[in-house]
Image 1 (cartoon, one colour):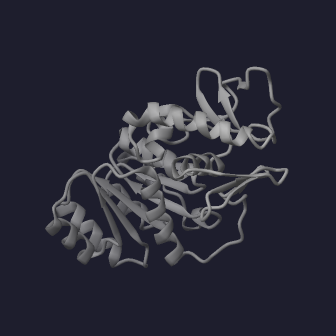
Image 2: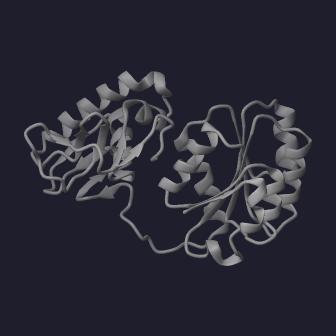
Image 3: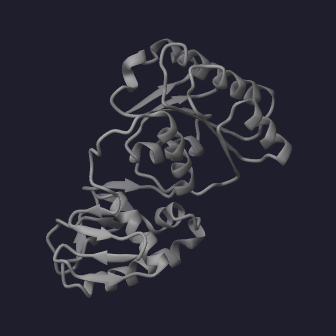
Length: 271
């Protein structure tokens, strides 16, 4: 779910009960690629995203709705941003994650002392941002029964995060390298999402320059999984990339039509 809070639209904020069913993230970020990337990242993780185009819109929205987490994405930490940190801390206990493009150690200390619960500087990897957000949500949101398969167990395939062993539906096991295990976990956690090489590399923290290495990793991972003779869960999408689709029927070319699954764009999230 996505609600955009541009300055002229503040009056259309969702009511206080809008975030009761799923964890809600108030994303405070100017319109642009960074905001689109973060919105996709959180939505793919099953979170409801409320976008505020600036701090004034965010302040207005928090008068009528209480999110479970506030994420402030900003180029630097100056007066308005620091005052917002203080205002959130003075509120009803909503955690605040700050993503800042550039900051020195003094800025970081001041932001944390004024009320930020966590802070990441620079171009942080999507997986790290999501891990920090989930950690903050765990502190403040009561645990709920799982509504979907564990990221380590989906569609009959399992990945042991300790031994890095992949297990197929038939019970066969194969050991994976750290790189192969990371890639397999990415697919298990995002069934049906099509990852281009660039999106997959970014999601694993390598940046778009890691696209060739991601293609090589997926190729070798598929060879490892093929050795179990249990079907190939990672499918090649014609003109798109790769997706985890263990229930899809195998074809001679092992390809799917590109219009079916959700797609991860080059920012590393589903469009």
